[in-house]
Amino acid sequence: MPHRISYLLVDAFTTTPGGGNRVALVLDASGLAYEQMHQVTTRLGQIQAAFVTGWDGAGFEARFFAAGGEVAFSGHAAVALVHALAQKGQAPGEKLYLRTLHETLRARLEGGQAWVETPTPRFRDPPPWRALQGFIEALGANERYLHRGLPYGIAYSGLWTLFLPMVAPGLIDALEPEMEPLAELSQKLEVATIHAYAPYGPRRFYTRTFAPALGIPEDPVTGSPNAALGALLARAGVVPRWEEAVHLTITQGHRMGGPGLVEVRVEYGPAGNILGVYLGGAAVVAESGVLTL
Image 1 (tube, helix red, strand yellow):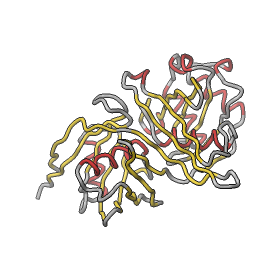
Image 2 (cartoon, helix red, strand yellow):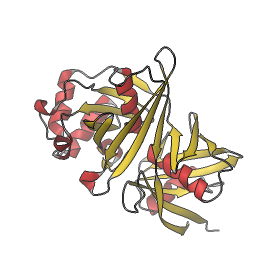
Image 3 (cartoon, helix red, strand yellow):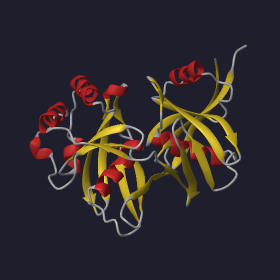
Image 4 (spheres, one colour):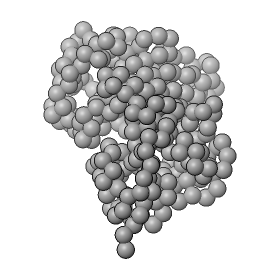
């Protein structure tokens, strides 16, 4: 018997349809098998999709898929999912919980924005300079592009990401990456994405994300890498730790014609240790429909 599956296409980190980063959502995926969720992602022609496979009160089981299969977490999909659940009246209150493959993450609605806790940040040793040079060349840049006062390195908040600080947003927009060598370098370094970032004001950054190793040449407006950027900057002491929580504003997507705005909140303990990283953003439903499998 064919399955009729209701879906939404939602643009995250924007209030304008066509901006931000689009994701497919299935708010009732109970009973769908792994293969069917992967098939829905492919059939809807979206880079990523999120599925609610079960719920109990304020707790929702969420699974995330990309073109290559299931992933542990997707930041923009989680933000879109919280907005969609609230809009459909399925979230019983302002606070809810997303049970992902590995962690239960807190989420809430605040002032029209969804705030979603990201997976616990982790860090790896920075790559050697020779490896870094390969990425710089594959991006179409050179050493003069690099900002010497900001950290580079590898961090995780859902995806292992290589961070490259640039001197100015204009240099980031000037990047013309070669995807094949960039994918090979990413696989060798065991990172999913490359995140170039530059400051443009106090606690404000401009970014671009490349993920050819995941089959995504450029991700328009990302969640997980921007959350991990906040954790990396906090760990390096670039943003002060004595405030208990620091807010960062990140803009992305201008180069691709669909700008978005990402808010990142890093919370600290009394000793300056990172207690949690949260993504904040708006979202808007661009399309709804029914798919038959």
